[in-house]
Image (cartoon, rainbow, N blue to C red):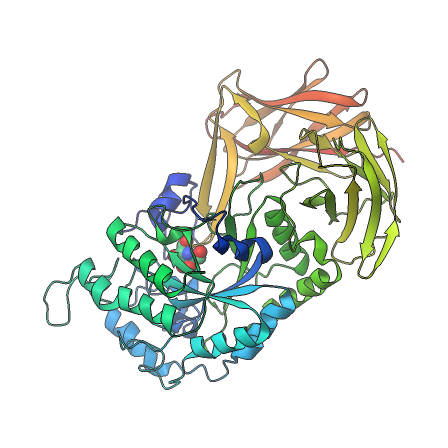
Length: 590
Ligand code: FHN
């Protein structure tokens, strides 16, 4: 039975209280895993191909989140679940007779991944519903034997990927199987009423099917096991052994469980704010659901896609972005267009992403993000400063040369070092419509002061992730906006009277700055903001159950330099007052 804290599921309006981080793991199974293969050959895939396509496509896609005329909001591949439509096993299995994705075109999907600039595809060969999207001899509940379509789309996709030089990986739900007797959260008996164990399911279906997907489709790049839940270690060991035997070069996802995977997968839809060591990926969706949901038009724009991709590469990881094809096999046009637009950008300025690694700053900067290759830094600017002056805080290594990249062209950029910041003189208009890249060639390996810099021209948001906290609790919380759509933030709450979140910041331009806070809470809250050795301001503002930004007042930094700034909860409902970030925006007098 799933445990969902403080939420009403199945209602059309779902209001969910934040779950402690541990609860996300309880619900989905262990998320963050140990890491084994960082130095191994298998690590090459992540080093070279740090952008990938995830595809959730199955029998559930044919329902598109609508059952008996009623729409269910949440991740479509969970439509069977009692918190969604609650479809009984027999009824769900019978739906296969209506599944005929005649428009499926493997080459078109592979070409989309290629056009998007992605290097490999990971597709659901079997999700928790137990329906195999490949021709399985081990179990007849599969797309060839149980549907009028009667084709093996995984074979077609494997051929298409090979032709286009893309890697292919298979998602396989190893613990959860909701339709196979003995599977995780599945029926507890066979049709004749005899008891089924997990061991039965594992021997009869899971292990043979993993043998099938690792032998029938040529070389594969990844086996992406998911939601290990309560699976005992001995089973994962056997699965990993099968993958190693049949596909020695393939990666095994960390969500295999028991630390037996090769790399870490972050919590769903989470793009980290601080660099993470080792080999890891973030998985994300082009809209809200993984699988196709008819109503889900909440698309990420090409710019958002690029921001999230560059942030993952900048934090040292890989980004895998999902599409959910429809039940007929076609890909929603808006998803395809957004991916292609982001891909066009990547083709113009590929250096910032491919083969690039983590930012020496360890976090994003107000105008964008930084990725690195040896002594070269790539500054991807998403928010172009109107003055044409780009400020780079704390760069200690001298710059040998700076160039504004624009496809095949590159223009030299004037630069100077001032007050410990680098300042670049750029044209007033950005050459790239979505973002532009500046390449800095440094005199030696990059060395930076990682202190957060307050930009003299653009708004700077400083997250509590980077704060030192005393007399309050800092924690990571995750919650679902709707079923399965996770949001995750770091927050500071449960403030004592003298509690504070404190940051050191670098200021380039002295003067007045508007300060606002993003927080959630209830009732009356009075916040205080202190510049150590300088001004103290405080103000009462509204509170909302979700995180919103409220202005607090102005503070002055009398000169350039290093400051300590702290936020405290001066009065009101301190326990639920939950701070996410502080924002500084320079006051424009002209
Ligand atoms: O339960 C699944 C979910 O349906 C989806 O496949 C995601 C993708 O990362 N993985 C599980 C939840 O973490």
